[in-house]
Image (cartoon, rainbow, N blue to C red; front, side):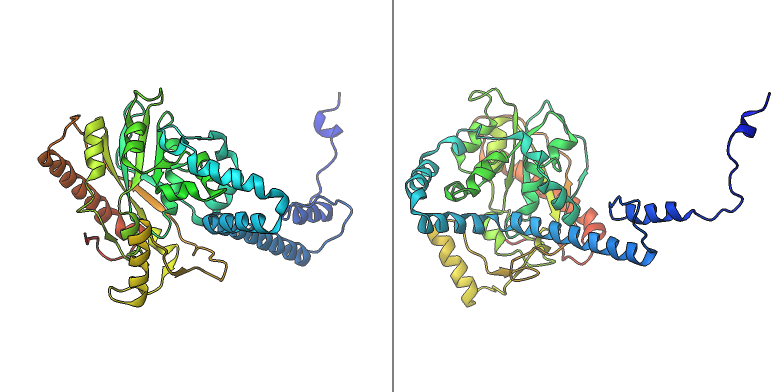
Length: 372
């Protein structure tokens, strides 16, 4: 009886790769399957470079659209309103709906968890390579008040770690529901407001925050994420700086005590490197313009630039370091001394995590400063 070795075809003695395999391997580099095409290594490399260029251009375009959404969605609404009379009535009714819609203020909103499956987040992930570092594990059975710093130009990192992106806190600790809050004006911006609501974001006014943290208004067990520095801090968002507005921000601490939620500071390294602010030193024309808008609207319009005329963000890794939770004892009517006590612990923990991780994730940044 002959052995199986005798029946099997002999392997060529040469270790050189067969020509057909070489062609298929080259084509596989660019995702092409054309077995009959004879292609050289040089052309395969060209196809690979072209494929890489197209992917990078697509990623850059998607990130630019995401970053500039507040602007182009408003421009799109105005264009449709002016250019297409047939849509005018429907658009006016929609605008009225935006004004009177109560969902941004009810503590529940209109969150759509399936939004995390959008291809957009794959491009955002490839562009910014976001990373989260936790100093201690979080308990999904508890509620937290997360404070994030710095604000940056438009608080992009806070959007990623609080929303339904698959890249944030919820993806690391299943069961936690984290609701970000933003200025009420965002919910008056047509089209963009629907994206913000779908991400799970709600209004930052006091009644809305109390509804988010209260179990009496709904069955959800929710935590809160707030960008503490607000519009004033956004004006300090210069590349490489760590100037924070925190010393006079005590309302989030009061709400944490009232609801019995542990306080957790988060520092987002490189948030201030996404865009470059125009010089706005106090007393300058730019600074006076920004302050005038802030006084009138409650928010400001910053003058900044990106990589190009389309305001593409600068490519930088975004790293969010989540500090150790500060245990808070619930008190429905906290005293000023209680608020000061927990606020001091919060400032100390935020300073600690910045000092510990700044040499690793932002070696060129300045020391942390609390300017107000």
